[in-house]
Every structure is written in structure tokens, then in C-alpha cells.
Length: 410
Ligand SMILES: [Zn+2]
Image (cartoon, rainbow, N blue to C red; front, side, top):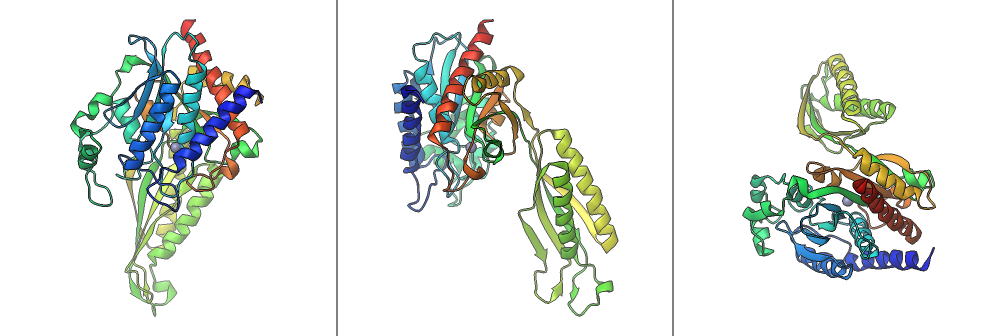
């Protein structure tokens, strides 16, 4: 590593450690939207943005922003988020913000054909109000007015929390950027999966961000005394067990990601054959077509299982988001960035997890750079990246910005 690389990567690692101390709990990291900790990390990010020669402001949705460039120029936006889940690690989101700040600092004497902006989103995880991507959706102009009445665990509404933070929820629209005001959005983020590590690669370029479909599957049989002979039972929980096992088998074969994370049984008694079972299903894949094909196969198999057992099946969808495809030109720029480092030809992968880039894609082209994390662990205190990987990530993102500038001039 050169001295500059070493210094910049070490700076990022030290700032990640520093931000990790801004937590609402002593036994781990938790930093939610519109909290005291949010205010503190925004102030720190603003300081570091100013050191990178960016003009700073906090927008109407409590996103911390910094910009350099003539006011009339459209901006290339770099960023990620500073909020965390409970019991978080110190890199998810945070790393992308700090890498963006360092890249802006490195490019402070470089003339670019667009303005350069860094944004630290205030809410990506949705931990406090149960709705994700609040910060990036405000910037993208897709904030929904009814969110003002969402409540946190203590019963406080988003409207009240905003007001306590010194903001007015009825003015969140002011955070929305005009469609023509951006060149695109680049986000660096830890992979949150093991593929880069398995391939012995530091960096990856994201092809698409999976859109999830979430359903509740309910299976109805008949509740009976536990003395009922087997051939007279219509056991809803046994039907659900067979269904969940089949879901794993089908999704594995299709390379989709299916997760059953919640189950409920009625009457929920130790000596009664369950008459009803309901479980959640979260399904993701690189494209909507692949995901929907897996769901069709699952549905057919579940119908068969239920018919065989004399059970009634019902699927109720609660959420569906389309996959977001990273823009080819920006993907190329990120690929060129990676190729310029020792990491070589860029490894392509899709993101199973959601990111701010998904929300920003409603407004402008997006692309993402993934950074290897140890053992694929994320949303956990053991989340880890190496300083050497951070150094190449900074180089790659800097080169990606220069590649976007080349394309913009050409
Ligand atoms: Zn994240």
C-alpha cells in the first residue's frame, strides 16, 4: 500500500470505530432514525465532509449532505446510511459514507464535469418506525405523507420524533431532489454475504438488488383431541412442516433465497391436533422473473401437499418490490474502478439485501460496489472488514467517479 492508501484506509477504519461509540445502548451498537445518536453522527459527518471541501447541510429528512461544484451543475451522488439495526456491526452503511467522504477529499483539486455530493442517509434499516429507506425515499421524492403517523415502540409518532429533532414532517418534501439534478448514485457497501470471500476477492460490482415478495401462507385443517387416530387427522402444522421443507428444497434448486421466519399455530395447545397454521415467506432472486418462477413452483407443491392431507391452503401477499437493476453505464464505471486496482477483473454479484440505492433508483441511475466482509457476517457485532480491502475500495470508487466523468464528457 502507498502512504496515501494507508492513511485514507486507516482514517476510515478509525472513523468507523468512532461512530460505533455513538450508540443508544452500552452493550452494543444501536443508532436509530431521529435519535440523539443520529444528531451526533450527522454533526461528525458534516465536520468530515467540510474537511473534504464540501459545503454541508442537513436536509429536511435529516440526511446529512455535502456538495462541491457550481449550483447549476447536476451532481454525482456518493453515499450510504449511518443508522443501524439493534446489535449492529460498525460497517454496514457507515463504511460507504466514509469511503465516499475520502473519495471526495481525494478529488478536491480535480476538475469534474458535474458537482460531487456525498449523502449520509438517516434511515435505511427502518428499525425505529418499521418502514425502511425513509431517508433515501425522501431524497428520491417517494416519501409517503401517511408515514407521519407511523409510531415507534414507545408510541411516539414520526411527526413527533421529527419535531423533537427540530424538523417538520410536513416539509420532508423539501428533501426531494429534482429528477434532472443528478448524474447518478454510487454506493459502496459491505457484501453481507460470503461470495467475495469464497472467491478470494476484495471487491464486487452489483448487477441488481433483489426485490422481495413477502407472503403469509395459511393452512387450515381441523383441531381435534390428541386421541384422534392418524388417518382421521387433518393436522395443519404437519402440512406446514411439509410445506416449509418443500420451500427450502425448491428454492435451493432454483438458487432463490426463501426464508420462513415466523410461524403461528392454533389452538396452540400441547394436547390438541393443530387446526390452523400460518407462516411467513420472504422470497428473493436476482430478477423478478426468476423469483416469480420459484414462487409458482412453491405454490404448486404446496397445493399438492395440502390436497394430500385434506387441508386448505391460502397465500396472502403483504409486500412486493421489483428488483432494481444497476445502470449499465454506472456498472461499467464501477467495473473500471475495480479493474484499476490489484483486485483485477470485477466479480459480478447480485445483492440479496436491500439498500438505499433501491430507493434512489426511482430518481436516477444507480450502481454499487461491494466490499468483502469476514465470513459474510452482518447485522452483528462481529461484522468485519480489513484495512487492505478498504484501501482498494477507496481506490476503486475514486476511479469509478473518474470513469463517470470521462463518460459524461464524452
Ligand atoms: Zn446497509
